[in-house]
Amino acid sequence: MISKKAKYALKALKVLTEERGKGPILISHIATREAIPKKFLEAILLELRNHGILQSQKGKGGGYMLRIEPSRVNFAQVIRVIDGPIAPTPCVSLNFYVKCDDCPDEDTCLLRPVMERVRDANLGVYENTTLEVFVPTTN
Image 1 (spheres, rainbow, N blue to C red):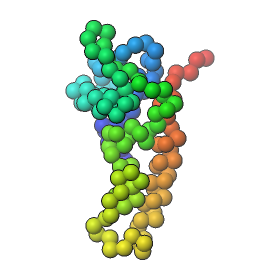
Image 2: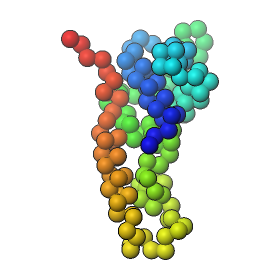
Image 3: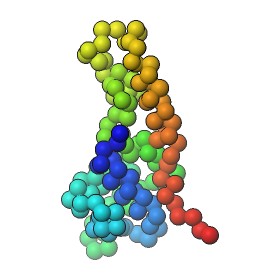
């Protein structure tokens, strides 16, 4: 399950994708539109900026905007920035592997293969879903 913070990050990115090309978008606009607490959103957007997904502009007319094309940002990237590992257990994580301290032997563990399948199923969706799903369609 993704955290509320990751869900808010995706909602904010939805707004920034939908309003792409209109210049920087104010935090207050995103917060109001998506019912996200403003202070919480500030921290989320700063994290996304620090990881190169967003850029910001200070001063009058300032705010946040996407730094890269929506088609180049997938949900897995966003979730990893905000929540860290996507894997359900640390021993099957691709980017944050840690041996489970309660498992004497990963090769004979009966739970690990199931957790790998769960990880792969989630990654299949997250890695193949980009912010492009938020691009408004014209009729």
